[in-house]
Image (cartoon, rainbow, N blue to C red; front, side, top):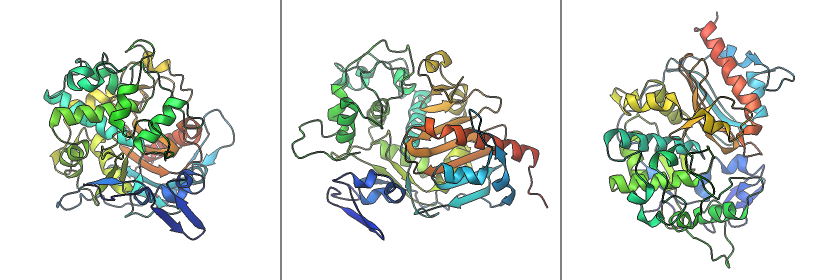
Length: 408
């Protein structure tokens, strides 16, 4: 059952104007600085319930010294401080955990600590982790073809792709993910998922399950990494087929009700009620930090093994670096992609969940650090944000390793 029966004509009011879903104004800048923290006022969602357990503690040990940590952006230029980088990257909320303690937490603009924010593609890492867990348990076969689980996709580009290729995004799809100038297929996808409104005369797919079978192939599966969100929509379909439950229910049972979250999460759905596994999660910043800390601790959190340690270990080992290199990410040299996580292969063992406009979970095992961020950057691509965010994260990690306790 949808939390919001109809959001087509729902509008949100704020002090300086009105935003609407149907004219796309909710997604314009600077309006999105408000709408990203109020996403459920524009799109229907289902609840991912936190359950009845006491929230898992995140002890506070504030570090005022972090604001002054300095770094040089990727590519050079003028050095800046950690605090300066938050404004540069249009941060809505940011939290730093060190050894399980909150050492830094700030909110800006419309976001507050008890308010959920849209996580966009950070959502992928939740469902990639769930799918990897089902593989470890034998409910999914990584080498099996997608068509063996979802025959509705047999004649699509996904039909002869393997589960592993979908999880590592090495499928060969005739689909270009470009938010700045969406090509026709991307535009049809956004309308099918409800991410953007459709014209009354639009006769294209009206749900994600109608859209996916229309995708055709381009190239050879397994050859190269190409970031394409429809892969994760297929993962959501796989999870539903393997478990007999919706992806939202599986997320609730397997992760959300077990990590001691402070609040319910909410997963956006398309107009047919199908949960959007690729981009639809809304949650609180502290609860996102709990998820990141669980991954840092090899799946163990809140007194229980939430995710098998072997699953986290496999994710951290990463995917094919050669396949990843073909995508040409200039800010991520030497990285790879595994089960919907971004793996750095650096000397700190950093791995991350990433979403458009600056959403992030960064796990740094060597520094015993987790950083979670919500943001509303004017541009979607992380390539525009990485030059200041990635070195900022590294600088904070190195500072915490040098000065593990607050000075004074």
